[in-house]
Image (cartoon, rainbow, N blue to C red):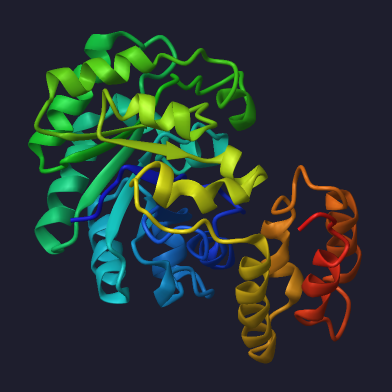
Length: 321
């Protein structure tokens, strides 16, 4: 069983396999999520949407869809690929997602979500979990959330990640939906009290390990997203601060060394340096020379023939290491 005390949110265009590998160099315990991948991409797409590095475990596939048959087929493929869990997206409010009938709009259809969970969980041995909001539009009462959790848990879902904001399905952009609706952590705590046997994680607006540990006195797990993406070195303290392990915090120089080796292997197989280092721009935030580090990567990582030297040279511009 994976410890979900701390996980990194699925973030579209951000948490790809390179980003996840980078995060894993800093914490061995944090649970990593893929970007949301749709059933259509997996079943009919031409790209490798499910590839990941073995080092990423524990790693969870976040799946977007609402057709129980397609969701089940994808769950079987994901298990065969080696994913540790599958998470159903019932939280994303974007128009594109709604048009595909998945994401936050599914909160209004708990029976459909339940069918997906039940059929997927019957077909695979790995857990199927759900990530939702606390409500949608004017359906934002505690009773609405309680009913959703009650119905979907009866179908076999034992872990819910709840973004502690409701979603407006029209009128707000996805970015605004992450910022405008007010946070209501207490509502998520109440869900844990009412469903004590379920594993409940909380998401939304969490920026420090002090906050993480405060939430963990009420619920089972915490998911952080953008704060880690903007300030990734925060993760280097996760195993000590959250799991209370007596290990040494990895220095930035060691992370750079490990990522340089990863980059050279990726480039040797036809990849481009920028695909990897774009996730590393915030690694030196707060240090003298951080701006020069970011600029050097941005200006040089896409050049023909670039390799890990670009990262090493950029890091050389940081002072006080």
